[in-house]
Amino acid sequence: MFIIDLWESIFTPGTTPALITATHGSFILLISSLLVLIYVTKSIHFFNLLVIAVLLYGTVIWFISELQKAKLQSNEELNAAKEKKDMNNQENQENQENQGNQERFENLDGNTTSVPVKVVGDKPRKRKV
Image (cartoon, rainbow, N blue to C red; front, side):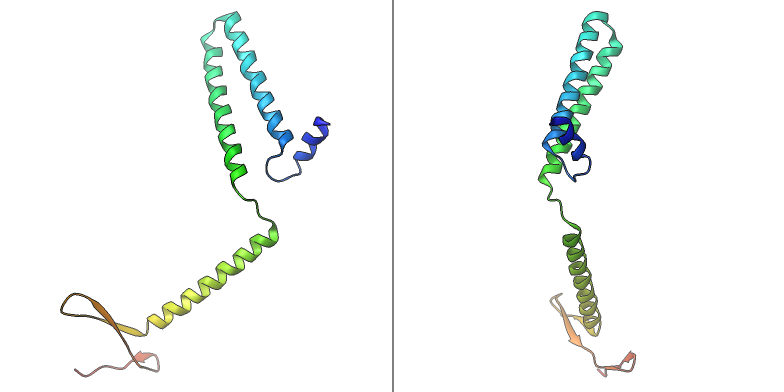
């Protein structure tokens, strides 16, 4: 039954067919009622409301299509992605620390080269030229 499916869609992440059908039906009824009111009253206010409703309906349709394109992930997938990101960040920090132990020199042609520096304690040794 449609009402039961619509109620259950509240507890389901993402969009469900019942929710999309209810959304389209609501906006079609709103727009048709505004068209009738414009015809009967010839009021600019109802015309303005019609423009707002049509723009909102277009925005909702766009949002629903974008939501359907996006892949929803479970909590386990999100946690696994977070752990992987944390491990990558940790590796990047270690690589940066290793690269910090190199001096960079500029050649005559403008290119830079790296030369490892031996570290004694916390301070690098001074090189004799």
